[in-house]
View 1: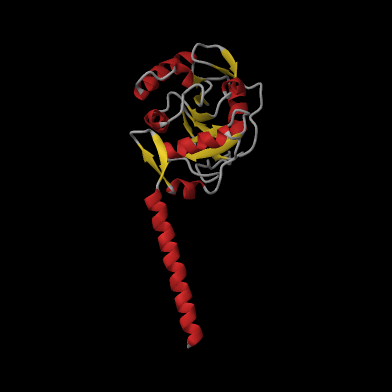
View 2 (view 1 turned 120 degrees about the vertical axis):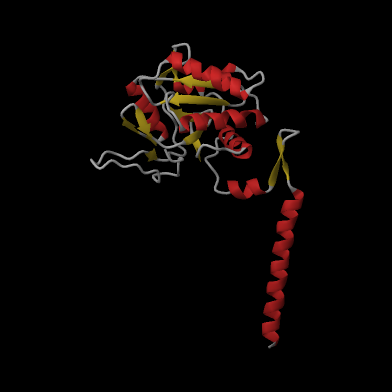
Length: 247
């Protein structure tokens, strides 16, 4: 299974014309209420009721032999580096798109991944959910996630979806490896109800992650270097232009 790629670029089309797997980005769209999922204990919950804080949604299936495990392992690695309180300042939802997955299997996966996170990570910070087929389809359609069953397995993209406390989709994070900065920025954008900014990469260049303080600090030296290079370029342009005029 390849890593997830931006909207409509994951491509595993069948010859019979059925839809390919991929992501149709729905930035700014609000996930509707009334999509019912089952939690690890088998209780029915409205998906939106779990999105009261900035939320990262991981569409997976729990029997996936490869990339779903890689995706969730990457989440487990990055969570300890977030300078935010799980369950109160953000939440992660692993949502299975396999209607055959059970709450018992979800509970087993939760124990494994919370152990991988380590420390005293609150159970409410990362929920593992299942659903019947109609609700699977409604939820995955709501976030623009398309997948195709192939026997017992699936062809599917690999992506995290950031959702605001109002249920608004604010960013898509592709692939199965994430930097703490990217996840932190996605959660802060969601907290402010901001739909993904195109300047994110430029902004991230100006910050450096401090592992001791577990936060991002403004990198003065890096930005100063850019300013100096820009200034030198402007000066060179002025000098060359002045020389041409004299000639």
